[in-house]
Image (cartoon, rainbow, N blue to C red; front, side):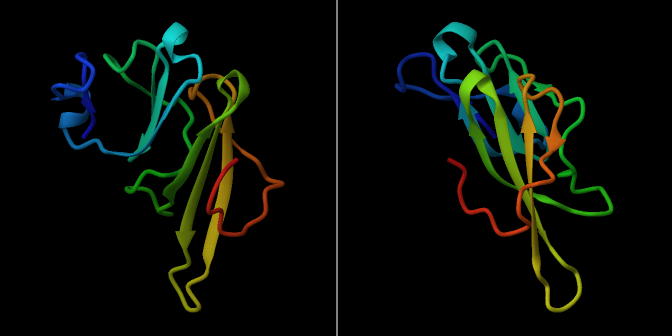
Length: 130
């Protein structure tokens, strides 16, 4: 669930959008949040908001992190760069021995609506994005 405060942290309230089974593993705030009110979240899906979190929209073409799909990928790191360009790592473990880990790097240049895999990224564990 996701909590928000409108009084400088004196009190917190759960956001209704996140109350029905959706979850957040990573949350990033736009460097220009004061002007554009953009937040980005990843959990069971990739979501974005342009109104400070009042309403959330799922990505139109997200990375394959839906747990109901045939290949279960987990969200890793979520980072934001210049111009609100987003970067997301996802990973999974092979289902047969030696249970190797596979990683992918995805990016969005349209505030999280559409995502594309960066095929040149190495298939190595990605512990951080900078």
